[in-house]
Image 1 (spheres, helix red, strand yellow):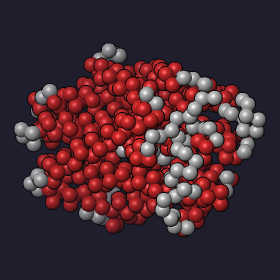
Image 2: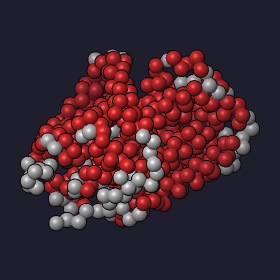
Image 3: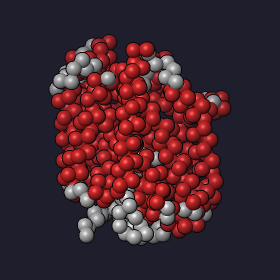
Length: 502
């Protein structure tokens, strides 16, 4: 019988889960959303969602993962089957394979841009650009008329780095990398933050970011944006945390570990991420321009605005530019390896693949998926993947998860699972939150998203006529992936009654 992998240390698993959460969204998506949605006002629904959704779901996912791991399972299909004591339960876990795989396929390509820009910064290429040409430079870089453009070189390097880390396994690869990567990332972010905080006019920049406009609290869009960010930033609903937690021992603490990993992510996002890009934009370009920058989107902030800012910093600009893009690359690496692990574990557990064979199979599929991603990036292909796999379906997945955990598995058994081996005493009020508040919150959020976003997305409202065929193609690809994964689940998951295969 194959010996299951385990984390080598408690610190290792905390940093690995934090590394999964700390990604591009902490330094780009969060400050942009906050600036768009009332600055300091945004933090009120953000912290409400953190307490009522983020922390409870984090504990649920850690406990489901540890429970599954104690029975030899590392992925959601088998975990749900075991929890529900029903063979059909495994099909509900398909999102725990589908979502991380699809997001991995485009996330790792975007991650490669940060590596390219690290090189462009340290080599001085970005510093030679005029401010008004940074946008054109980025556009040229990502506009692929053919598959063999320069960006593919950095994409291949990024693939190789991810591949080599994952081949080393959970403790030998993921844990070792995260133990180095997370501290390095925080150090680089602190250096850049200190530089920004010492710029003339920083009070104006921070004021733009944090001065609240309480009149906007009645705007449901702000609450949706804040709640969506909690999902995105904590990697909830993907099935990643459950896989990582499955490598814990049966009585390992998850209450304090889960809270610690979430807190590390919050520090990276609220303290570091919010103190760099947008405040610096206010200082160099003014309040009105910064508002437009915040609304221009994640890519524009990272690859257009920030190079302009570093070019205005003077002699040290290229160095700070390198730190900025390399910390994004490191953040991307710790997230992308976590996205790959669930499907790797699925192949190892259910089809007895060796580690090398499983990793090679997944990355072969990623390369195949990357071809349309690279070629049709500017035609809405990635936007369609991201809406369904990176946004809407993670809320659906989390809704299914909390209902299964609190109502079908049972809140009493669930609470016992969460608190077993705990190093801290969790307030009992969270039992009520888990059973009633979090499910209702998620159901309301899901229904609201369906009516405000999903219906118009399904109808392809606002999609240019020339991109409709690309959008349909993306939907066909996602449908095929789900169908294939459901087929594999039907043939693979362990039958807990007999110990054989179903």
